[in-house]
Image (tube, rainbow, N blue to C red; front, side):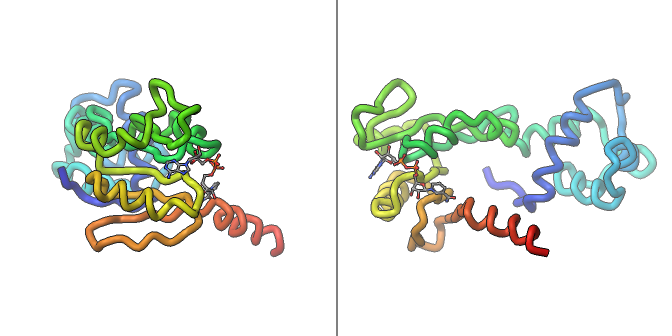
Length: 200
Ligand SMILES: NC(=O)c1ccc[n+]([C@@H]2O[C@H](COP(=O)([O-])OP(=O)(O)OC[C@H]3O[C@@H](n4cnc5c(N)ncnc54)[C@H](O)[C@@H]3O)[C@@H](O)[C@H]2O)c1
C-alpha cells in the first residue's frame, strides 16, 4: 500500500504525537494547537504534520482523537508491521537484528540470512532459502551487512527475490534499476560530521 512519504524530521515526531495521544484523557476531539502547546512544538509544524497524516482538522474542533490515533498508527505501521530481512548476520547484522527501536516505526526485522552455516539457527537462515522466504512472506525491504566484496551479488539476489528497498551498510556503491531504492549508510560519515563541530 502506497502512502505519503514523510521527511525524516516529520517521521521522527509522529511517535511523539502518538504517545501523547495515547496517554491521558484528551476528550473526543483534540486540536493541533493543544498538541503543540502540550509538546512544546511549533503550532504551524504540528498542523502541517497532522494534516499530512490525517487531513485538516475541523475548524474550531480539531481532530477526532480516536481517528487521529488510528491514522498515526496506520502511518507508523503499529497494526501491521513491515517485515524486513537482513543479509549478513555478523557483528553489525546481529546488532541491528537485536535492536528493538525499529518497532517504533512499524518495522520488524523478521529474519537474518548468512552463508556461514555455523551461524544458522531459528532466526538466522541459510542464503539458500532467501528467495523462497521473501516470496512466501512478501518481503520488499532488505538490509545489507555483508563485506563490500559480496554486496553487489547480495543486492542482485535481493532484487531477484522481490526486494525494492535496500539499506546498504557495505561501503560500496550499488548499481540498481530505477525502481529500486537504495539508502547508503555510513556511520563514519555521521561521526566525522559530528566531530567537525569540535574543531569550531
Ligand atoms: N556503513 C557503516 O557505517 C558500517 C559500519 C560498520 C560496518 N559496516 C560494513 O558492514 C558490513 C558488515 O560488517 P561486520 O563487522 O558485521 O562484518 P562481519 O564479518 O562480522 O559480518 C559479515 C557477515 O556476512 C556474511 N556473509 C559474507 N558473504 C555473504 C554472502 N554472500 N551472503 C550472505 N552472507 C554473507 C558473513 O558470513 C558474516 O557473517 C561490512 O561491509 C562493513 O564494512 C558498515
